[in-house]
Length: 291
Image (cartoon, rainbow, N blue to C red; front, side, top):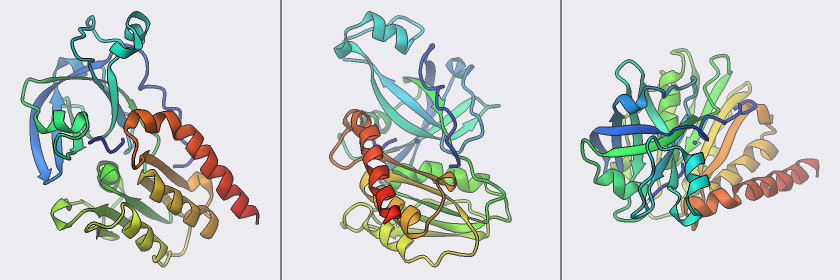
């Protein structure tokens, strides 16, 4: 299952479109938890890949249509000009967990739910030597070392970005992190500064996002203005956005907040409706602030 996936004003996200796609070769994979697998890609096809310092960098994985062969090197724009829509590659968005430029190794973490979805089953069965094409990276958030404190919250889909953000925080940073997973078996070791409290929340069959909203709503906010990163399922993201913007009156330029995915929608459906959904949410909450 693809749980999609990637502050301040968000910088342009233009790198993920156009030009030849990157060609990654599977080097190895690792089972991080019962439902999360890490796949590490390498090879000469990553020679042009470069990040820009964000901790929510994401890539667009490209899965070929059944029975279709594309000219090398893959170029999404050229493919879309030359092939009918039904033969275009299917895209799935995933956060970059880590990029080792010196070793030229790219780590991607995948949520796995059996045979459900497209990218998850691919990752579950990935073998050394397998090839994966992708474009990117895009991205728009990095921890501000001058922030009074940090608030990071998300579900499994946001875990790679949260983990990367924690590793980028200065040792003196303070803050609170809430990560919602199904149960204790899905927890991972996170490298957080001493002043950043990490709390794992277990759904245990409850609706997605319910424990997360309760935890953030119950947090006694420290003094100062936080820098906030909230991502995951669109429904709970909407609730937390209301809490932070309307209830806590936090300025937009201190928030990186967006739905990576939406319950009941695959990525294609969610991406097609995401802009309209976000506009409706913003309009609703702006009216609430004015009342």
